[in-house]
Length: 219
Image (cartoon, rainbow, N blue to C red; front, side, top):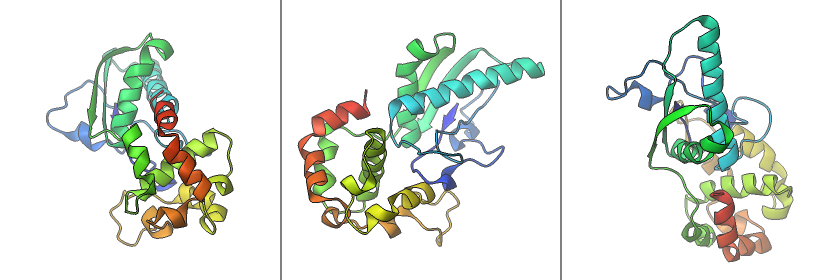
């Protein structure tokens, strides 16, 4: 299983038949290869960036579906599985390894590989108050976590970005999957200055509660 990332916009959705680049490597040999689609990418609803439960269950459900399809079509495949991911996909791969015993114990998951996995450790949260291009990743985390907590964009983002937050995060990505220089990206729509991006109270709350936020991201 290959995992993609990072981003939230539907442009990151995989085209039909598209494989994860890691699975094309000469060092990867398997009886079957699968690249899953994380929740909210290419379909309805929010993509909860770096939310471990949704990531892990998307992968595990994809493995279940692949096994069922192979059985229905009479295609012999190994019952053993390995998960590999890069960046956001690496985070999803680690989440899959942690969630599999309780959520999908029937799956024979033999290995998990994570290359440069995205993360949100407590040290990272304090940098939310520092200006820089990294703010687009904090903004994706803040938006996804706020939505999961039932908060409105106006509760965390400053004007005028709060009013357009849903449209921005559902249509733009951190990078261009097609490497199109003209594609609308998050870095164009959002400022790199946190004082212009977040409401002061929300920004201070995120910095002051980084222990709790980091624990939620890694739960």
